[in-house]
Length: 432
RNA sequence: GUGACCGUAGCUCAGCCGGUCAGAGCACCAGGUUGUGGCCCUGGGGGUCGGGGGUUCGAAUCCCCUCGGUCACCCCA
Image (cartoon, chains in turn red, yellow):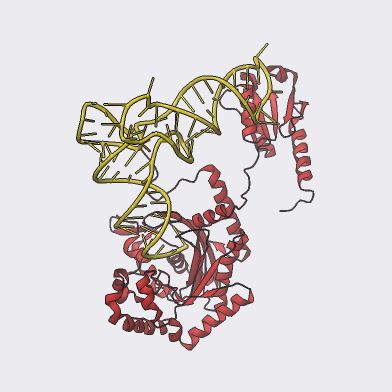
């Protein structure tokens, strides 16, 4: 085969697609339970939106974007969703639909990184944004929601780290203090940290370089630079988390690679993942709306990686739902019977919503039964010319192997009754 | 983007000090059972040995390049 998926992208084959759908449906259910409404935005956005939103000096913008040109337009495949959601919010004046807007999304994102486990060039995120509230309650709500989703799937040992990055008043002060501290030490910093010293000094904080970390030990802490209001905001977020019993760690070095964050930033990691261990993260981005030229709008949100969630669930031995079992397989022999199967499969699917299958390849009876067994059909109708002319055919229950001769006219009714009976025996009290 | 390791049927892998080395298990298809599944038995289809170039009488096996994957860095979902 000459063609294959492009680097860092994957096909999601039927078996796996089933898992994806399950996870997506659960996430939607939980988010909608909390009053979030879905938003879908284009995958293509203006490069400028992302550059301004995420930050000109960030790694995402400087080296990870899939950019393309089309005439005058400079476009990118979206690398994240907060800026696009904010763009849509401002563009469509969603602030007229209520003081606080709660939106969620699930979809593909693109970053041109070197692929590895849990890091693809096309990956998928679910996420939510709370727009229009600067209340620390909203920060806590976002964190609790994200944790709630992960815990819903039974994930344990989650590590939640939080930090406050201050606001437009304290952040610049801290930034200067950090530069003042590191400038004399610049020689000893790692090359990438040295590069960041002037452009984006906060990013030095989450360097994993051992030498950098040593120097960081003596660096000023953002916590000491927070204004009274910022400190208070952060304290309240923590208090709310405690009220829900959500354990967290304060990490003064947690920065995150998107410039729009201020006040709360958080990240959730799992030991099930390896090097790319963040299941999700987020924070507050009160300056973003103005940065995009819109009316000031506070916001807080989070995003989680679907691939990583799936990896974590698979290694945790999560029990995904089984594929639906066909109700009936019509094993037909001979042209007349095959035509009958074709007509009745289609009729019964439409009329009774029965999942009916039959052989499309003209195989032997034995093969058809094997096929019925392989796809775990509940019943098989065995139909030859003889049965057809008599109007009666054997119906075999594959689980028990028992076989009864039935009138073809009465078949759908009988089948439905037997399926209902089997279902009620399995779960006496119908519950979800 | 940097470094290391890996790349043989759909999947998991054996073969790799160059010369019946193109194989096994699983999966798939057919038959054993002239019309009855799951077990078993028999047979079959399927591979440019990731791709290209080189060394050699001869390369899956050695060398170079390239593509892809994995792991780490980086970064983050």
